[in-house]
Image 1 (cartoon, one colour):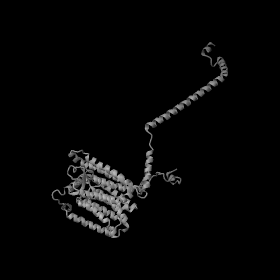
Image 2 (tube, rainbow, N blue to C red):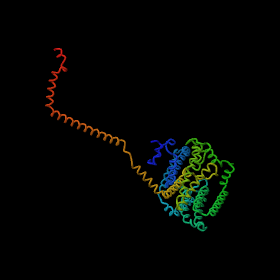
Image 3 (cartoon, rainbow, N blue to C red):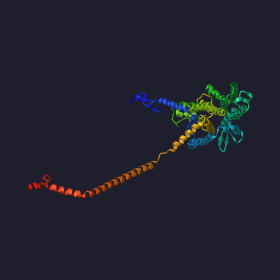
Length: 496
């Protein structure tokens, strides 16, 4: 049968891939498109995608924190791995928070929204307590206890996102009324942002304002009110900037490019690191800027070290990870029907993604210097713990997408069944094979011996039964041989 006849044969199974002259391996492109399409349509895609992206971002952060902090730690007499151990400890603690947050159901967060906001505001108020609050570069935004510092505003971001989701979900049918829109949304948001701004941390306050804007936009607030709130927030930011000489100097340096003294030192060194990296980078661990040239190399400007050591490819890789995270979060918002989860996801998305892109734009010179870390990557325990806890909340929501619980349980069942099927150990398998072969040989030997004994018994019986005839026959043959001329010996012929 030819190939064409085989292809036209109706009895052929449609699931079998048969080669032909044009496509010896079959239609690989169509099979790949079908596989990728089915994978993208999977209800559990967001669940697994968040786990993979979060793992990659935290892993990149650990590697780059080690690379950017090793030199300074050695110069201070510490171990070169001190930065890795510190960040790794916070990553382990964050993993516990992520696991717990992922196991809790969304109903828990809805009920705990008000207590969470209360705890976040209480922690933020502690930064103003004398002897407990800690100021860094003029920002009173830290708590110092037993030699360890904590930034409460990072946890206040997560509490604010959950609180906005719970409040706006309840108020959603009434958001077109100004009274329901103003209370309690405006007092709660203003209180949270005001406490952060009271510590002179404009960068963190702007990130929290982006969080509020993302949650309010997804909740369905009328555009006129959203626009009015945006204008009011912009006026407030301009007023806070104009009244601060330090902030005005940063903006002036960014606009004019002319710096007095070393006011542009950090931004210039960051751009120099990106320029030295080129396409492929100088190599992991080979940065020059981390040798004390670039301030906050492992913190706010770690993106410059990534660009210097890993080049443009490394920076685009980090950008791609955050872009994929944005696509996953957008997909979650469109797939989930619960308004509380939608609004909370929008707030967390605006926080993490907005802070990431602001950090990268500052390092690349597209924005004036604003002290915000790169989520999951920059060194800092509070930021990493809060980011991983927020990721755990997102994973908890992804587990409740339509069809996701069934898909995840089916996948887990298949993994458990595949793990349960284990190959036999090599020694036991070979031993059992040898034992089987030995038993087969022994059986064959016994069979051969029994066959030989049976044959010998038959031959003995045949000999006994035929002995008289054999003796008479032998006497007659001997007589013939004595009288037969053909069988005479040569001596007898010579005698005759």
